[in-house]
Image: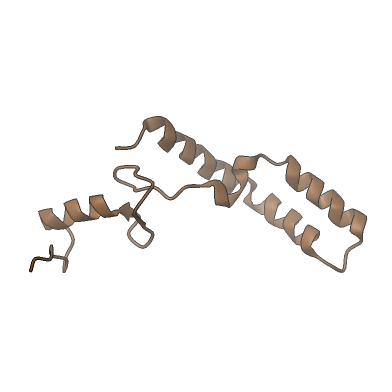
Amino acid sequence: MAKKSAIEKNKRRQRLVAKYAARREALKAIANDQTKAADERFAARLKLAELPRNSAKVRVRNRCQLTGRPRAYYRKLKMSRLALRELTSKGYVPGMVKSSW
């Protein structure tokens, strides 16, 4: 199980990303638009820099929904390999069996 503080920090980041997503997208569109004037694009970049750093999507860490583990994460299943193995061995994942040879 991951530290509760790390899990909560990641949840705060996810909330900030959702809160600032529209504003961030609009400023990025202005900043990357080559048809706009250079000073207008620069002003958009400055406003973008004023937004909280944790409102950027890249700062959110993928974590297991069950354990909070940040590594060995399967995006499709939203869980780590260890949690998947545990559920598989208990028979909760249909069609999956532990391999043996």
